[in-house]
Amino acid sequence: MNYNDLIDKIIHENVSMVEKPRFETILRHKDNISKLKGDIVECGIWRGGMSIFMAHLFNEKNIWMCDSFTGFQPLNIATYQWHDEPHTPSFDVGVHYDIVMNNIKRYNLEVGERIKILKGWVKDVLHPASCPIQQISLLRIDVDAYSATREVLDFLYPKVVKGGYIIFDDSCLTQTTNALYDYFEQHNISFNLLHPTTDNIIQHSRKAHPCGVFMIKE
Image (cartoon, rainbow, N blue to C red):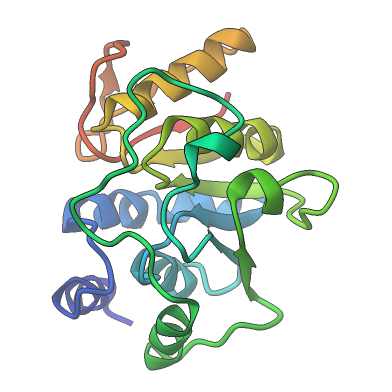
């Protein structure tokens, strides 16, 4: 399969809002991720385009697609409060479940033993009491919110294997950068953030970074 053509098709058909360089981050590190134990997890999938891409790219790994399918979590049920949490996007982030299912089928995939959907707020579907995910080689977080980012890290960071990748798609938003710094500082975890196109270390700052920065778990 020509993965560059697949990326172009997903973007052209508006199945993903992610720009091509952020797909290429994953493509560039494909071999490293493939060698690791653990599944591929995306939290916040919109129309499913990035998960579809990863399902083709890592065709021997389980793919978990996590989303509420109704948009942002209401602030009154969020686990964490942050002073500048925005929940009024200028576009519709809530995509109906059936639309995502149709997109999965259009790209010659099917939900089943390997590709799985977790439908609901991340604080509920990822909770250890019910979440079936065991080990993660790549965790992609695209939830656009402070509390949801913290909630994903609370429940899934411990499941990322050593050497595993964590991508913060919306690291261009200050609510995301503050969430990740708060999490790692609270847990006294040292980390480096890497630039999505150069792989260079980014200087720590709570200001917005480029979209799609990533880290490799030490």
